[in-house]
Length: 437
Image 1 (tube, rainbow, N blue to C red):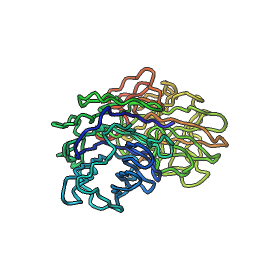
Image 2 (image 1 turned 45 degrees about the vertical axis):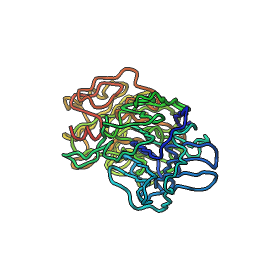
Image 3 (image 1 turned 180 degrees about the horizontal axis):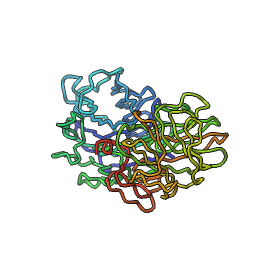
Image 4 (image 1 turned 90 degrees about the vertical axis):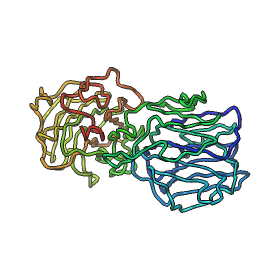
């Protein structure tokens, strides 16, 4: 069941100005996904949608008539990036194009595949009035448009208009659009709110006390945020689209009986990095943890089968180029495999439930497996054999295996990411911050 949160205002405000601002990291492409909706019934609603063509839209319908429909020409397909979305709405404007302004990462969108602006002084948006507001799925609860991804710093202001520069700014060093975690001077109006600030709290931070509740699923906290993007399994680098990614693309369910593997969304060409992998459902065949510097390219391509991948599998054997490299302890369901990759010295290390195999010491650089130098590597997982339905979950530093938090976080000298076991000295999580340590 997908997670959604909801809130119903106790009154309806006046005012035709509104601002909606949030940060979004989508984890699924080519599907219809509702981000935010308020609905009276099937013919009276307002909603924000990611469509199956990966365009984003704002839509408002009253009495079955479409009064607002702005759908971008641009497609949002990056499953590794955070997008900052701002809708600045002021229907009092005499120029139609000024009544709804959409900003993505601080830049105003001017090209729309569908462009139905509201009439002047239009006041029939269902947001902010005494109807249930839902974030994360369509208000009818059909489950056909569940949002798949992560949201952060969600603001709704009724009666006021703010530009993207209120909630974000350009980094003077990198030139990238970055979050303003404490935007100054924002007035939310009586029915406005500010939730998901620096975590998974649905308590309103605006001062209005307009708190949301969790309507379904489990709302988890993630270290992945607009200021520090963590690796996930790469939804765009998956040889078998039938495999199912979920929980922010950290869980993978293998839905075929073929050999397969998948890479992480971030790569490494220098530095030292660590991640953890848990098999949450395992039976026949083999599951793997490891690394690669290429994508799978055939139905027979398993992790460790080719020269560009190394895989530690459930029977304890480690393969590269289909050649046995080492024999370690076997592992099974709910064992946690640690993978440490030293790109500075081209060494690979594996642990099982906190114990480094082959008496290795990644911090000291001893007893590791040699890997090919001069490549960009990715963390990887995979399987072989007729074991459709296998489930593996990666912890890239988010502190969770699916919705279960690590039981007792290990030490981490870099202070970047949360893991079950101690991170070897000198190693860090694979994230944008970790890549720049």
